[in-house]
Length: 364
Image: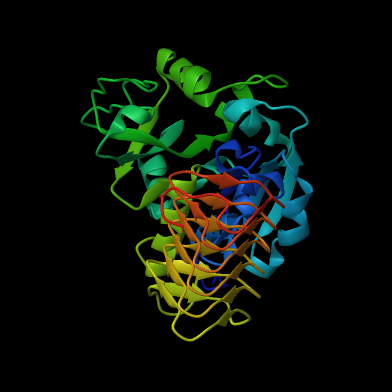
């Protein structure tokens, strides 16, 4: 966890944009904002805040919108994490650039490191800040190399690391370097972003800076990086944290195939593998098989059920010998015995499926 021995970064503020509605993770985000969903046993945002603190940054501003009150209720003033957290709420969606501009009144430092609140990353934040300083950049963009960059914004750089273009998703990318959703801005650049209207950093701010000849540099690395926006990525990111593939200063103790809250009950013969997480007060029945499962607090997995690469919401129940694979089960839902939910199935909160009521196979 964060401690006072970490050398501080006195002239750097952190901004985390957490205003999104998380529609791709519905129905889980109907009750909680995406950055607050349990990930390896902690709210997702807590992993990022711990990394910010470990890099020596103390002052953090959260740009909130959807269910804004939840963040302050949980993190308060940040003192429990060795941070000073302030909150700014958007009353109407302002986009990434507008969201950054909206928190300007709370900023104190000359340099501001901005994070997209739904990215799980392992990059060395101090190294990103060092790149920003040594290149005397107006903006430094964290870039990661990926195998298939077509689904992302591509950012080519020259031999000095200076950004030469900013391309939205394209079928023929000229580089494997993508925008990783983390930026360092000089404060004066944020001051120039138009106030009070939606602004996209990707479509408006960055192209405008390049057109003006401003110093925009890339910090390229191959550190762990995952956009946690879809159920598949959310499950994999959580499992990677549990297994130690993704780093997090917020997690203590050894990594392994599962992470079980001390208050959970695991019956004999239950198998927990693949980075499975079992939350507080959850109950796992005899002979149940959980592989890469994210089981929220108070959920019940009955005897002989199988849950693979799926998220089971707060207080939900999976009946005996049910099969849940690549699915999302909403809070308080009840999946009857022998049901089969596969390939992207989503059960809304409170819905009850009768025993054997949903099947993919012909046997009964």
